[in-house]
Image (cartoon, rainbow, N blue to C red):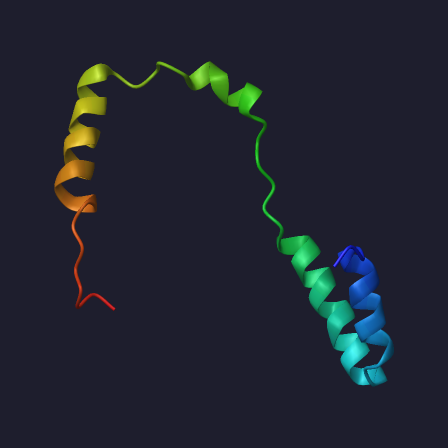
Amino acid sequence: MDTPVVDQVVEQLRDLPFELQWRVLEFTRALAVSAPHGVPGQQMLSFAGTIPPDDLQVMRQAIQADCEQVDANEW
């Protein structure tokens, strides 16, 4: 599988009818628009250390108390 993904997609597209090719194009356009755009980590460093230690302890306790539970009937 050393063929690039784009080449593999193009190969598959060639065998599809025009309508399905069009749907793939629309899908790829929708994916491109919906792709998440993040912030570089360097920009986030200015927030380091801004949460008071007491608040961090409260968050840590809440995570340990609630987030480490597994509810087998949840799904």
